[in-house]
Image (cartoon, rainbow, N blue to C red):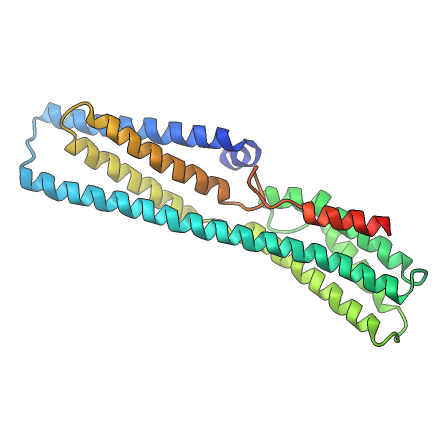
Length: 263
């Protein structure tokens, strides 16, 4: 979908500019058409009806702002939580490597090499797939995880059940990976939310077209639409924590790779 590609590739200022331009221009056009149609039909709206319409107009505007504010807060919280999970994943990589070294560098050389390959595959293959919204991770990552578990499983018992603890660490690492993959595809706002926001903005513009008496009223409508466009743009940037400029980066895992490779 072109919108997904645009949100993934565009810079923040481009996203903001495009969304604001579309919302303001389309909203003003809709309001102007309604206002013009009202004048051409020469329908008169009495003051009581106008007062009720004004109350509905303010209520819908407040509801739209509240919905987007709460959604933005939720998206920001989810992004921060996922960022913490990525750091935990990086920590578990280093922790498992230290246990392998403690077990014996010669006997765990193969497992440590697979661990480094796994971490590199996460950055090089998993992340591009998550940015594209793929529901599954890289097949190579899953294959390396299976090979890592097999390499540790054949190690002899001993070292205070260190082998068992290393398998537990592998399970933790796999859980971190699965949580990240699931989050990449499920922490998105439902499409019905965007349709609802679009419908509310349309209602705001229709009511504004009915209520505006003098031309300068469209200036105030443009200002309100600009504010809504800013909120929609920011929410669109946050919707999809693994894509775009404001996104969860694999930097923590890259640092872990550097530490693993240096040992």
